[in-house]
Length: 137
Image (cartoon, rainbow, N blue to C red; front, side):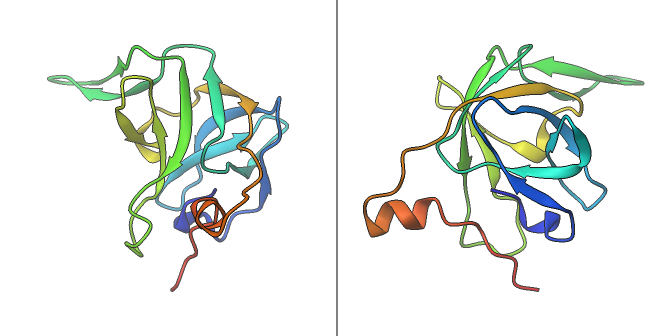
């Protein structure tokens, strides 16, 4: 989906095959941007499978400079966490080792491809899991 702080940014839903780039939208969070228009946030459904061009990286701070730390994974499943917390980031990636990292914690400029969207929900629970986290300001 799109994190609560992206409510003022133009958005569109993700599609299979989309090429996405992690981007700071200047709203207090990072998200996925469409490669064809970096001003458009691409909203990803929970359960979507993503493949990154390189190992996923997060900032790591050194003594006098900022560097990157790779997480050892090139694929992830998009999740939403802490959905009950209103003013918290929800968009996250889950890796094969079970580690979950907030999308806003990723380094900017990483490229990913949407491999597979989640199955259409069949139950009320599945519908709730794929529901967009709503911003209540």
